[in-house]
Length: 322
Image 1 (spheres, helix red, strand yellow):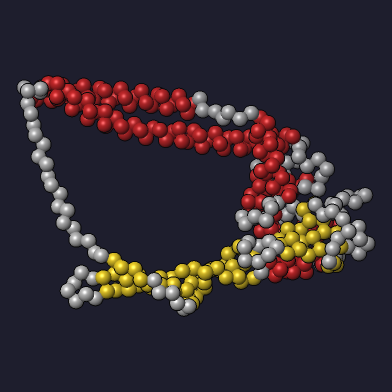
Image 2 (spheres, rainbow, N blue to C red):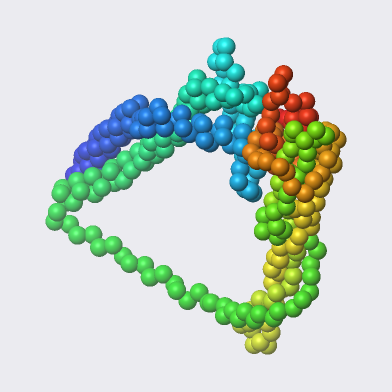
């Protein structure tokens, strides 16, 4: 009799678990197929303009992660429209350097990426099908209780041993001036002030500025205390380990990278001056200048009567572009 009840409960629980599995799978599949993004076309065009083309043309405002400038420029190469140049490295000196077709195409790249992630996380809901096992167990237990109302099966309570010994710990902070060897260097922005160096060509028609804000830093470790633990043995001995704390140090200041870049600028036919006679707002849009030289170079204009100034192109080619 008990065997028949178990078989009946097992069948009912299995049917409910299968129904739960199929229903949830169909529901999630519907969510994934109908997933969409609510933003309109203008939103993605503006995103492409400001987060891709503007970042590639103007760079960032004294940011630490200068590598994202190159990533933005490379994204403009992902779109291929017949008869239209979308590669920002080819059109950065043009008057119309925001072709609408390119903005739409790059915006679609962002849109598809957002949509892909949305579908990915919706697809992750399939993992909840594992709850079908829980449905099986619940239905099985309910069926058993209905079919066996008169029986009471006490569940023995096992008391867990909670006598695990705990070790008492005592931390003693002892400040010292002991210095440990330095670690790897990294970019930083707070250890040295921003630094500018202006330059001008021979006839004064082209001038600009080398702007630096990045420095080279490293962490120097110093002994800042001890961590001691009291032993539980009868002798009362305690063991101590040193605590090392990082201390940021300046390796090369901002001026070092500006001066290094200045030698390359002078090789393009410029001389260094204290101030410039006008507005400088046209960045040389080679992201490797920020990525390799750690400076930004801007000039007053790009084009002459014939075409792009030869000296402007020289500045662009100071570092091999991506």
